[in-house]
Each structure stands twice: as structure tokens, then as C-alpha cells.
Amino acid sequence: MQRPENDDDRFVSFMHASAARLYRVAYLLAGDAAQAEELTQQALVRTYTAWSRVDGDDAYGYARRILVNLHNDWWRRRFLRERPTPDVPEPRRAEQDPADGVVVRDGVARALQTLSRRERAVIVCRYYLDLTEQQTADELGVALGTVKSTNARALRKLRIAADETTYEMKEAR
Image (tube, rainbow, N blue to C red; front, side, top):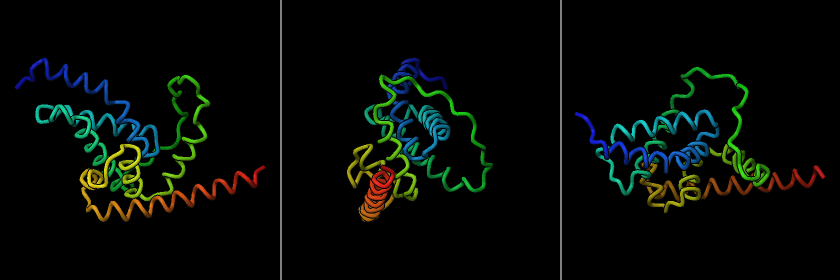
């Protein structure tokens, strides 16, 4: 059964509007640019295959949920897969001022990598995606209490990491 042309056009519009946001979420979850690209592409492919069932008002939420589930699946299987060696990184997209926020982004990315997979997912959903605790619980498929306790534990770890970074910066001077 062929899709009507307007469905494809709506999906293309959605993809152009949401791909960068999905990539940023994937990068925060995975901590790796190549893995983030792969997760984003897979999430868009799966969203397209289900496009006729996707509610147009919440297509981004649907794709984001797929992305989070793909990341969780990847995390579970990562020890069974081949591990690639680091390659020369691809050039980054040109920004208005590349120096703006580099130190902050690097610090946030490093701090997020100190968290467990679930803690990182809760922090990304709560503070990057600005979801409520209930929406985060629904997104991750866990209980509300789990989100609350995981969030508190993750924030405590991030505060400790921030304190250690500040201390190291003072000693370096």
C-alpha cells in the first residue's frame, strides 16, 4: 500500500525540523558523535515506518521515545558487539563563534559520562528536554519514585564532580 504524497511531505518537514534536536538528545545520552548519528538515523527510520500511526502533534515525542529505547537497547548489547577504534574526527559544523561555551559543554559532557545509563537518561529528560517527573517516568518506562530517587542521586554526583573540577582548576593556577 502506497503512502499518500502529503504524508511523505509531512514527514520530510518533521525530519528537517526535528533531526538536530534528536541528534542533541542522542549525543547527550550516548556521549559519542558517531553513536548519536546512528541513533538519530535509526529513530527517524522507525518513525517513518510508523508515520501513519504517529499523532502529528506529538511526532517529536514519539521519535524521542524511539531514540531513548534504541539507546537503552544499544547499551544492553554493547558488550556483545565489536568495538571500533577511534578514527580521525569529522570536522564540526561551523558555529558563529566556536569558542563560546566549549569549556562548559565539555565539562557537562564529562560530568554526564560519570553517571550511570539510567541516571544520565533521567537528567537528560528532566533538564535538557524539560520534561516533568511524570513525563520522564513515562518516557523511560519506570516508576515515578524511581525517577525521583535517580534524579536526586545523579544531581548529588554532578555536584561532587563540579566541586572536584573547581578544586582542580584552583590547583592548576
